[in-house]
Length: 373
Image (cartoon, rainbow, N blue to C red):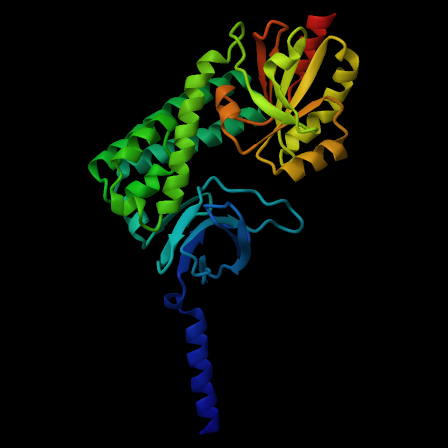
């Protein structure tokens, strides 16, 4: 009798452990080269990591209980073999709300979700999903052309990709217009063109703005307004145009303006201690500053850092030029149409823009050599 009881208990425990009904994230995935996936969790509001779960996949199936957060973002990828680097898949992150149960299915490189209000609705919006698949395929083709060093094909595909992205944003905006009170509209709002986003914000229903996606919608809306303003400002950040004035404090707490550097060439460097490419470019900037400091001034403008981080960064990196602190203020970022870091803007002695350089590039240094030869 005891043996029978133990057998029954073991059976019950086994069923409890393998039943997918007890989990809020389940799925059936094909195309794996091993039997393990990684579920990478993050907070979409702060983008902070919430951990990585290593999940065994048996007969293509898996199950997991995620934390009962009100909002969680999930990337699902195949675990790399050995010490191989993690390769992010072409799948976008999935959004899971508190109390929901989500099911994932498909090939590991083309996963779809169902079982929640957002994804059940988006699966019915075939015009949007078809355009998303088209863009995903274009992205793969661009990567392929880039690997093959076919620059002509790469550039051609990028043009098509950009056009398709504009079309996708328009389709999403149209859905929001027709379904302002759908939670799917709130989800689609998070991935629009900035100009479409500013229009869509006015259309969304109040229940959606105040619902589980509310904080994320509010943060995204602020970014749309910022980038729409940057797009407008970019018309004035071109060679020959007067550079916008600014007022920022240096390391001694003194306020400096663009006029402080009149009479010599000025290179504005928008950077941050958090920006790897910014830091990587500092040695070349130091070399060129030493070479041409009698003919130009570099003005580092630190963005999105605390003041302590800025001061520590300047000291640790031993930056010899003028250093100004901007922090999280958007005014100068918008006025100079800064969309990426580092951005370097060369200004002539009369305060007019000579050229704009986005990212770390040899072109800046070639331009300086031509200018001061």
